[in-house]
Image 1 (cartoon, rainbow over the protein chains, first blue to last red):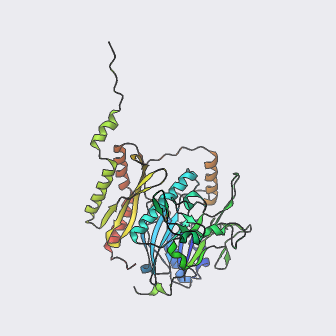
Image 2 (cartoon, rainbow over the protein chains, first blue to last red; image 1 turned 180 degrees about the vertical axis):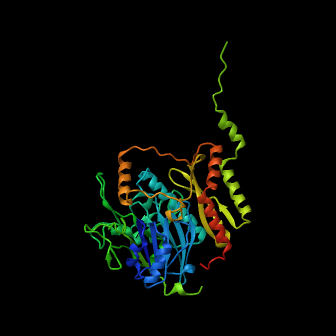
Length: 280
Length: 169
């Protein structure tokens, strides 16, 4: 099984804060946004103190950091964009090959309104498919902090990431809208909202005085293309604990000692074995 | 006697349009030059993506031997009109790669809350130094962008990659 974790670390400066949380070696690929420390340090400390050997996966995008136990030959960046908000990697495990796209879209804090954020999501989604096609990556996992909710236009519309809420909707395949063909993605995070599911009600908590305030937000998400669906073991879980430590404060919200976001994880039925130590 | 009709058209834009290449030609020429000057180790693709409100040209450097692509910068413009255009430069270096930087006095959580509050409550003027209104401005800003530390570092990193044997993955 291949286990992936994404975590927006909210500008965490000291990597040692999260070493105890990750040293059990449960995850094969660790992806971080807003990571203010050198990922080499985290990989080194995890390898020294933990169960597995980790190394940074080299990438041009500083905004998004990837540490992997898979070994350089098995995970390699094939594309990064100018703003560092999109990085695409090729992962080879067993006979399979998948694309791991990591995104960190623009934050609504600033001078961008919702329409502009949706427009940015459209552009990044188009860019992603263009580059995935160029790299010959048909099967995609798209992971990251989208700074949009699953129901926002940029995430859910065919012009954007086209993230639908059921596998069945995605299995139907491409859709044609006004002559253009669009490939849908399965977004399991639709099913993680609120308190009627196991785990926290979202990945980020922000309460303000505006009339439309959800309190919990699902900014961190993972989406899958149709070809990944048969591989899904855990399609997406919001983690409230790591390494036996709770990530929540006394109110049940993200403990800012670690980050203002909670991590998300998913698991694919791909053989990892000891690939990090294999010769290529 | 009748007063002659005045010619109110501006001299600068009309004159400079004759002397300065079209923005797209300028981008294509830089792409050709980069290939030539790196002896083909780097090539450039100029794909266009569209969204509801704009078109975006990406200046994508390709490390040919590795089949690796990295967008160096973007140009945003209205559909059908390449000017005015806005360049989106590469992301700035993170703190640990900067020779000099300033640490905010307040911790990030407090400053984030404060800045969010300011955004909500106070009108602000946002200046975009990367907007080009004329072909001359487009040429000058493109030159400034290509000479920036971030672009130079990225090109150097890609050339370094091109010297190594391609990875198996």
